[in-house]
Image (cartoon, rainbow, N blue to C red; front, side, top):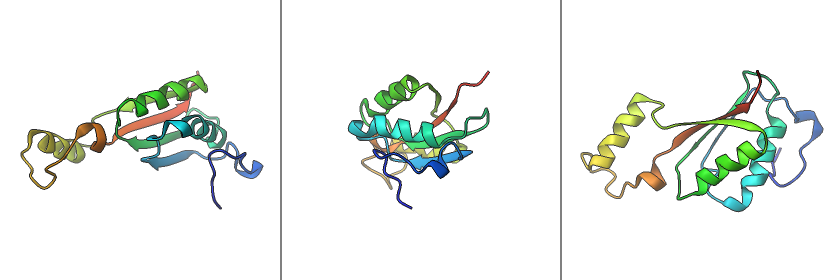
Length: 121
């Protein structure tokens, strides 16, 4: 099955997913609205369901996506330090202590963790 963000989804899968995991899919602003709509339509409406995205900032792209997520009635939480090993490597690359990634750029390389969910009281 192919999932097209800009097409209506098959009714059999709507609001059925407890978790959605994605990475590197918020770079292109022209797809933000479609991606937000797909996440909302596929995610099960419950207090425990969530979409987990990993994505670097890439200028204002991630910030713009967060705005659209909120406009679509979803909650989001952006987490910078989500894993001690990943965080340690990130700090080494930033400080230049690890030369295995000489052109490391936080804006384009470090994946932030974005947790998207429904706001349910």
